[in-house]
Length: 138
Image (cartoon, rainbow, N blue to C red):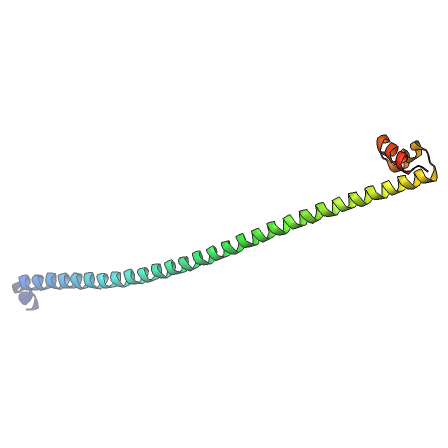
């Protein structure tokens, strides 16, 4: 009996089955489309967030670069000052050292030491000792 009803209405049963499957596919397609749009919006939000973070990092790096450039200039200025001070100290040391040698040579001439002794002890050249000898000999 059930089989007779099923066979007599088989075309209607197949039609509704196909219609049901078609509606299910359409609903599934709409659900996937909705899910796709939601994912798309989430991805766009994450991309915008990343862009904002990249801009902030870029600005931070620019500020950091400017700061480092300023510090580099300051270090170069300080280095130049240190080199100048080293040259001045060296120059003053040379002047002081040559004054001491000249004073020693002058005192040795006044004490009556020979030119050879003065050259040996002071390390001055012979012409320098000759000039000192000429001007400071008693």
